[in-house]
Length: 526
Picture 1 (cartoon, helix red, strand yellow):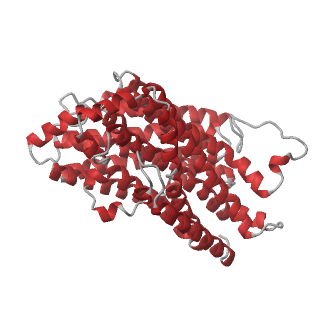
Picture 2 (cartoon, one colour; picture 1 turned 120 degrees about the vertical axis):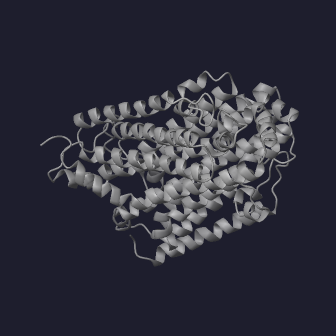
Picture 3 (cartoon, one colour; picture 1 turned 30 degrees about the vertical axis):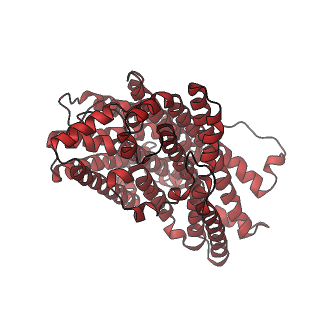
């Protein structure tokens, strides 16, 4: 029997398991791309409008740091790629990371991979099926993006070039996660390591695009964006580098998988002490210790993002001051240049902290579905205490991620501007975003307790916040729609005093936590 025996039926199984995920990711990304394309066509209908847009954005390091390098900004396709292209690349990278983790390390961690190997299945069949499924999904999303662009009137060659960029970044992060699943011993660690690669790649690309661009050559996002869809200098070879590197990582993952035992990892923990220490006595302390690596990984990502944008802040705000139109494009309104830039970066870090909070609660749901919750509750542990053991790491961990990111942002920005006062102001502004972060997490808790089958709605809410807060100006959203996001109701620089919205969100969070607890105590597990 070969190592790939049984790959065919494993591929059919993984495709069936992932069918709704594939559909939702493809439809969501296509809908967002269609909305941005239509919005940009109405915002910049003439060549003169597009030339003015290109002049403003060429002078803005902030926009290059957030969106990526601008290519052909005087064309409709170039504007669309600049406005939303970078965000969609990150979304596809996250899709690849989550999908490969679910189909590899999660299956192995919970014993289902061992059941598959008890049949006439080769060692590499499960990994090969996971890789093929997610590579095909990346290609499907890329082709869908190209089709949407062409249907809305953009040139076919540029549309296919952007679609290929989307597929290439997906293939690269499929390879990253496949290898991370062999290096790490749990699904959480795999997600943490792969997510750190995404954050580092984004930060390196942002730092490079603010400068002379050389640093961007070390980032996969830099590679695919160098393809320059819709530009006269359109290139295809950077996409080959990204996809080839992903396939090389997949080859490395398969080589490691052939040499390790099922359930083991390259990074293994040594034997523990014969008796439990204080950090393992009790459910809450044990859960906190398990959550610590994930918190550290997300906090490191926030710290990296904050430091990169903080170091670039002095140059960026000078351009903001000279070109007030940039603030309107970024949705910072008529705010002062410095405050407008910092508000945007603080919001980005707050959304990152919210991502950690929801992912931590997702692990509680996963534990329940895998039957480990029943084992915990078989001891002298109440349902409230068990739920609390998952909620506290989510709430406190998100505060750590937010504090790490805003401290790095404020500290580096204070350093480059020689104004120590920015450290306190940025950190204070960042921490006032915490009620909004906790409100989203509390909605997730309420779903977890009362409507666990609809927990995916918490991720949908986070995605809606990202779209509303980061892409709202480009989508020309009405004020009423913008107010749906809890982040629209937090104090912003330069005013960091709490308003009514902060206290309302605090009370609402408490009510939602109670709803989650009552629901958990009244329903069957599973």
